[in-house]
Image (tube, rainbow, N blue to C red; front, side, top):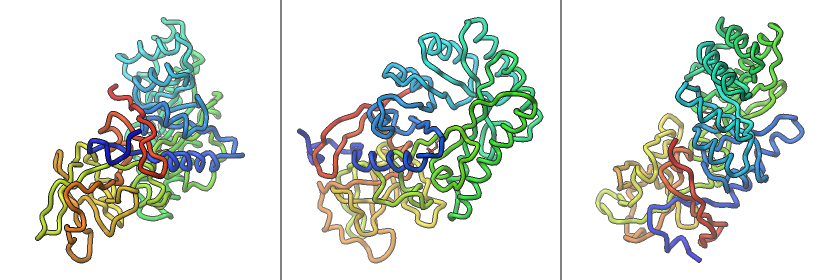
Length: 376
Ligand SMILES: Cc1ncc(COP(=O)(O)O)c(C=O)c1O
């Protein structure tokens, strides 16, 4: 048995109890709504985390890479939506998954890729439903709900019996400044994807899938009527950005980075730690929020927030900790060797810096080490 104190720092720590509670909260949110939960496993990239969050051995998942699709399928997850736009160089791996029995769906945002994929699927004699990406927040990819290209793209797919449906992700919800703004993103996300589905149905198409989601829009949204599934990822861990948006409390954040104090700048009131941006990521997601946590909020070894301490700057392997406000920190309270736990701005980004989770259940005993998938 290992304890946190025996781990080499920096190390990624996962509170199993919080993960289970976060998973249960999302399932409760959807209970009785008839809306399916399709966890986005890009956050955890871990079979164990996905199973615990879903409270099931294999539930429908969203993936952001084909490596995730292949890894999760190999572990029994056979209902997989690959929610990043395709290129022809990836067709063969998608078709191989389908041939192996995976119910895989893919995403396009225009008629050209739709036609290219349909031709490849036909040549391979496999059936892979294709979902059309809808842009509801001017954030990145997708067709506007009123786009002229929407019907043309759908026609190419429907002709071949491969029109899977429509999907949107209002990632801009992360920039909301208050609850009203977040609700507005949520309404806009749902209205946009429903409008796209309505146009397709008016044109005579069946639209089996109407998929939306990000953690904040699903948790803050009022209605999910007309939606068939939600795709949510970061809710399994939550993070400082989600706390800043008001969709979770600081105490709900299940992930932290264990770090050692390696030195002091006593006159400046700084602690130097061994968790720099390689361990925390460079994500500064709370920068635009009311409470900026720098590169992370500092907690003690048991996960309780310490004073007003944040990682205010980070080099590759050094983190600099100081009080966010108030008097200069008396560094003698944190001698060299003190272990700290740092809550991440963006759980997906911080987890991605590590090879594995060290799992604790409230205490300091590390009861498991769960590997994370890396690469594409
Ligand atoms: C296409 C897509 N769907 C769903 C999600 C899940 O969002 P969240 O992590 O906020 O739950 C993401 C996250 O980036 C995404 O890119």
